[in-house]
Image: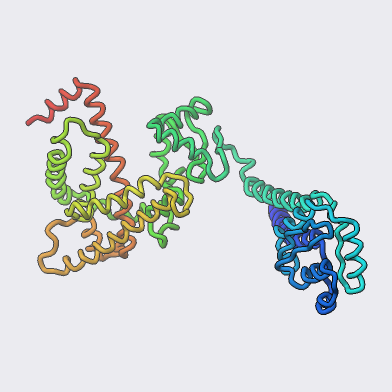
Length: 451
């Protein structure tokens, strides 16, 4: 009940602040208007021989383009749209312009005498008022808004006050410690982010905030054992919402990671049977030889990680979707690079951001996969069928309760592509690095693999 009352008070204060902001704005404009035209007889003004008075009349009757000339030749300018507009900015601008000019006493006296009976009041005496009467309402409104927002944030965190969390900090609001993690990864030392917090807080577990979510990081053998032995008991599989929006279509992005993983696991045993594996191994071997011959052997020095990513993605396209055309693979890889570069960036979905490009890349990959499925169904309907039964074809052939629609299949394939890409490429690169760094191990491996 206390939390509900606090929430209601915060909302009421916020609404009152907004209403008061609008109401205060009207009064501020009224104070800032130095000239009030109530009822001006335009013909009387025109018949007058006094040019100063005619100019003042025109200012009242045509306020959109108003200029008053003083007897000493000085000019009051800037009274544009004061009467026709309720703009706070224009009112403040008018006041700042008028404060620069000290109108003569004779001018004020002449205008007052001639226009008082006509219903025109030119009040220039109040122009000497300081700007604090303009700024004070703004400060008051900002204070109300800040207090209201602070109460809302405190209410949101109140339920966690009595909870015991692991040592550590969550960093900035929303951003958390994502920037620190990204900078460490960009420098090639992602372990520094972990090691610094292990040394500072705890060698077993610490808390942090990444990608807009608070989380606990388990370290060491004890933490790994706890995680892998307590799956779906004390812990469950989970992906942050920003990652789900990239890897899954909009209609499935709200599903839980546990639910999506369960659907895929029902299908995986069929893919890992000896018969499919016997069909995959010759394809993997021939593609590895072709890749080495084309991209490795002609050069004295190569960059292992980019080449291993190219190989693993080409292999995944062949095994998952039976795509052989290099141009088609290259087009898919360009879309996929957008996903890998932006999926772990700051989740700001605005045009031009890496995260926005990652979402677009995922959508383009799914569109490509849906197009492939249409062609594959036509091929399956033929009597001979496809020559190679890839994973996509196996999903299309399922007709029992585990059958999926086109977008679900596309989501599964995107997940398989993402899960098999960087992990496999990194494993190949690290194996190459340590074999080159340890020649005696490389010699034994080469000897053991020789026929």
